[in-house]
Image (cartoon, rainbow, N blue to C red; front, side):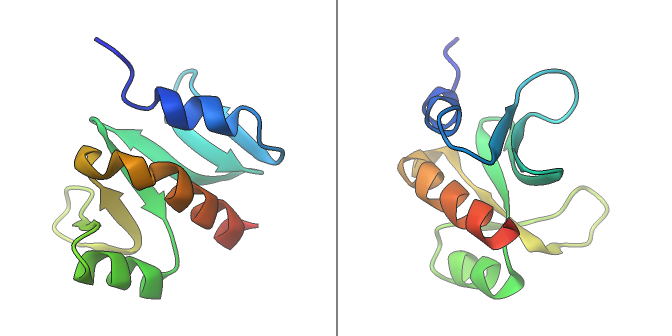
Length: 99
């Protein structure tokens, strides 16, 4: 099975100030100590400002994120694998928002 995140990892391995966290624990991207993107069951979970999350959900590009406790987290959005072409752009946006 191929890695659905390979293109994201390859891109961000070359970007200063962004760390590809692919070892043990949470898999994703960090800026400093802040996790900005997590690889989640073939989809991408991003941390963005709530207004941007609302916009992505309203336009159908993303889905609200519920970590399983019945409460949606307002600053996280799940971007499905069907939208993987936009992952790098959205990760760059999340990195800029965290910086």
